[in-house]
Amino acid sequence: MFYGEYTHNLDSKGRLILPARFREVAKENSIEKFYVTRGLERCVFMFSEFEWRIIEQKLKALSFTKESSRMFNRLFFSGAVEVLPDKQGRFIIPQYLKDFACIKDHTVLIGVSNRIEVWDKATWQEFFSKSSPGFEQTAEHLFDL
Image (cartoon, rainbow, N blue to C red):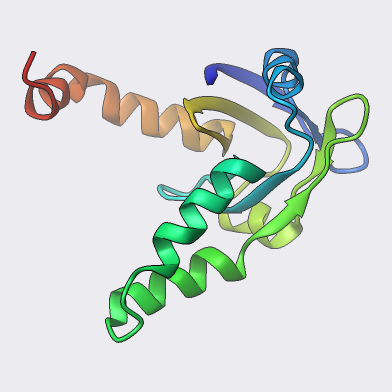
């Protein structure tokens, strides 16, 4: 669904633009609304409303008696906010999420199939540099082709 890597800057009003290809995918799939929240590895996760509902159901099914479930759900859902990109595809990420992901001006938006991740550009470059050398080993452990 969402694929690719795109570099964008926040505009003077603090808005971020959804890459043209992501806007096309959203239009093709009648996606008007997204949910953004704290992601993993210091990025912001961005889900279509449909994908958000699926994840919400899975997380609601976790046992609230387990401390790790409570902690994750608190951080994940308390950070969540609905965003509606305007006609030009611009949207605002709340300041607390930008602070969480260390986003200042320069961002990278990456498509990860059912979600979009928004990264501070320097944080993404650091993550990519550290992770890419182990790409083949990770594939070997995950897939038995």
